[in-house]
Image 1: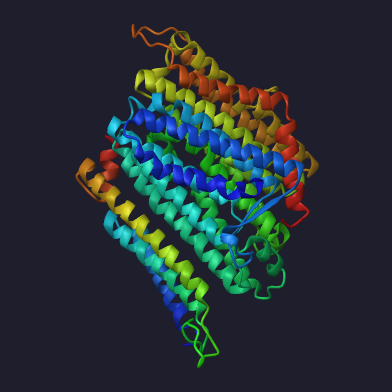
Image 2 (image 1 turned 90 degrees about the vertical axis):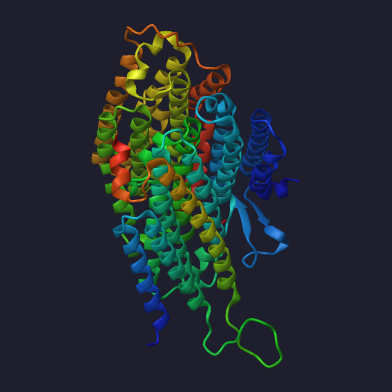
Length: 113
Length: 491
């Protein structure tokens, strides 16, 4: 179980990608995309953890700290993810207004008309 | 002052984007955006001259020295691509006000200009920065703006195209993020020049291969390299014409720049090829892209979609140049990156003029336009000649270098592919030109395109001819960029 975090990352990543590809519903696809992105966040955070290290706040009692940089990077990536999700959901609302459906196959049919 | 230009190049359009909202009328916002784009272009010219005269520039953002802080580095390659992207933006935005008139309601037009500037910021940022995580951020800035730009299209399919591109684009950017995450885990740095030094010492070759794989696939998605091109035709066909013009001329080029920068400049082509057969894959995919996408382009009845498939084929030529693997091959790719931006910019702008006058980009709408819109169609014909690669046009120069590179490496197949690809492009472009110069029965009183659209079109057309005759700028800059990258001279 040494690499427990990484197995979780792989499982979540594959689950997310599978949902994106297999689901017909546009919102469910986005949920899959979100799971996929979250897996990447966990990957970065796991990489940064130093065994036995504490939170990177300077104190007299600690000598070993976790690496704060990937955490900061992931804060940025989370913001990017939120922006993407907001834009995607807004698009789904507009698609629903224009096509009257949020199912992939129905929209494809109606696009051809 | 010159020391601050690398950051100003990116920050100027970034700050101009929200500043657009100070104005109320779409026309004033357009004028303001023109000014911002012209200034951005001016900065890139100053950077280009400085880099070619004096040498690379480095800027430490916030005064934090690299590798701790984010470093912006402008060398011969990045100044060359910055010049291209900002020039295209400055020319295309001239035509935006006229072109958007019939395509976008006036109250939505401010959004277009804000998104345009944000997209430009992202593209310039990718080129200027020397930090791989910063690249990811700018990749997403430009991508998010692009999704919204595409969704502004008139037809409802535009929304669907934007959604599909969003899903694929986010997966691509996420793959890139995974790749640089692995690289950070291996080396502990995100700074490009630092990475290139530390990657040599990495012992976990397997993890390195995985990291390269994620990065390459992620960028290839954004670049629309053949099997990953699915998002491109719909996105280009349904976006507002002027947005298509800008994206076709700049977005895929910047992704290609990013690939070249990382593959040659940071990872080192030999290091990557020892682990993954990237150059062979690029050669094969490029060849398939040239042939297949050109044939599909021939079968399209919508001209925007035809040109979109043609763009996929042209990306194929650039991939072939990288696949050849020599300095000359890389130089051919860089030349085609530059020349193709002007070719496709001119072609899509001519189509934008037709959409402005006839309201359609179907090929039937072109019937008889050669007589009613003579200047637009003359521009289209000249740009088509450049795309085919007729001598004295820019398209000829880049294909000539590609053929030279192929002969130098003994890859006669590539020479054949370039000829066949050009031949097919002659056929699909001829379909348009033939209709344009045939007599039409309709009595429609279509006039010439508005003056600003014509000016923008002809600036691009003249650039095509200029860079076909006087090749000092393009050949010189691409030669020095290719030499620096291949010989591994660090930044």
